[in-house]
Image (spheres, rainbow, N blue to C red):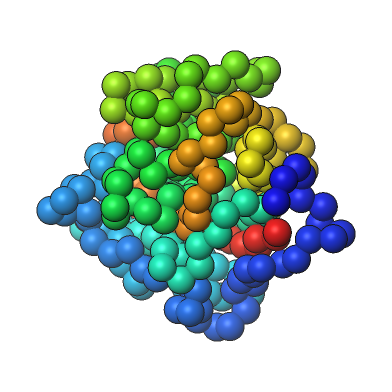
Length: 262
């Protein structure tokens, strides 16, 4: 597989239209709890506990809800780990984002060998993240979305991409390249978030517009091995500078479909 995915000739290898009345457990599993004891706060100082009851399918869509009960926050996270894993292709999701400051919805991918070689060496591809517009260090526009490519400190020299607003970090533990885009009506309208993953480059799209390209250059690992999908709605955490706007009771992340083409 190489080059761009031509949807007219490619095959739909995975699809969930969320029209079964319940989560398809042949495709997805729940991640539950607060990440403890091994990864409390899911590694990001997130506030929520993940629960099955916060993930439902209704009106032919997946709804992940963040809720607050007394002083505790609950939300949902699902993954295709060990059920659907793949190498290369086009992945897309159509979704409407939760409308509350401090929510952190994401659609992302992790290397399927994470249990053997751990993160970040397994690689991570963030197709969509939203919520950092409440941080001091980024644009305060609610339409701010981003995508990122994460990899180990031994992988890749600093990538020279031509993407506006790209951000490169080398934390010592990991390296990542991130790009941002401001979209209109993230809460009121559905938008399509996609990735096109090939041996020579990884491209990220919103509503069919490519806004980030990560070139593989001569090195392909860890992005030449199977990955799995994740969908989640975090609350607080470092992405929001640990902030959730006062008065919160609930917010919803509404996903119309997830599709993978090869």
